Length: 52
Image (cartoon, rainbow, N blue to C red):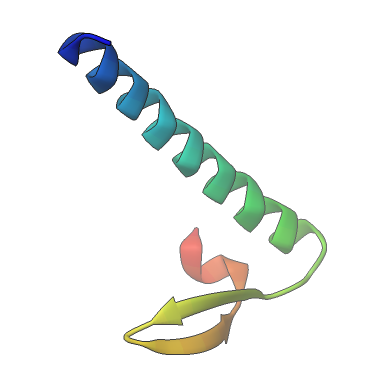
């Protein structure tokens, strides 16, 4: 794979991860559920509104 192809693939992977995160937050909001995240080395339960 050329360097350009690798860069393009990484960009598409990054965009996919961002899209998946947005969908997860939206789904959590729609179903009135919380998200479990790691912050500063601690596992926390947070409302999806914190990400909007």
